[in-house]
Length: 353
Image (cartoon, rainbow, N blue to C red):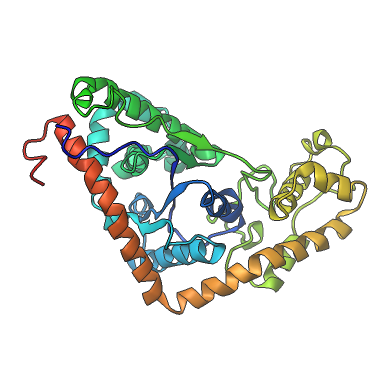
């Protein structure tokens, strides 16, 4: 049973972004830029999770375009696909296979507690897709297929990562005797740890500081898209909702002012600084002085990404080749995991496949 055992990686990161259109500043600061930083210290696998995207209906042509756009954003932001793996989920069939096994490991009660399903399904839950309900088991499969040790997640995904850990633990417990035959004790899947850091892990709407920045908000002024021009970025920051008071002189004072706190957090994240440092720089100054400084900073950081994304989208054959190469490299790891999992579970013929 130990003929194809794969050693446990010590610092492998996995994360993904859904290709559902309109990548924005929240996606960049909350996820993509962290992906770039993690390349320096971890073995990284970054996935465009197109299978997750179809839990709600997607126009097929738009899904293709959006998959390329997310990939272009990865590359334009600084992810190196020659050193790390970048691919789209649907090219590696083992994601779906492991998700089915995890459907049989996870408990209905666990999935019923997932708040994101309740939010996305709304009041008409009977009309929601089964895929939307079981989305967290596919997410667990995405991560554990590569036996990732760390996942950079936003606050809204922490519950799903906790479920991933529960599934890993139950699988390890349920099949402990079989796992022991691989010479690795009773711990086959790791209990993946979240990576949550930075001053703006959750970027809020420019029109309502109590709501997360979202591509689904009907107002385009609520978000800064990664495809926005310099003029658009400046206009949106200029029109961002604020209050009449000058900037506070303490972080505690900002907590009662969500729009102000959001803009300070964005500035801090874009400058690789802290909210405290931004407050010390702008305390007592009016927003008429702070907003132009924030607009200049945002344009300086985002315009190069915007330009490179446009160039890559004009050469989508190159983007497609990156995804295909990444899928081949991902499949090498995924197929090894699934050979082991099939044998652990008891599927006849596991070794022969």
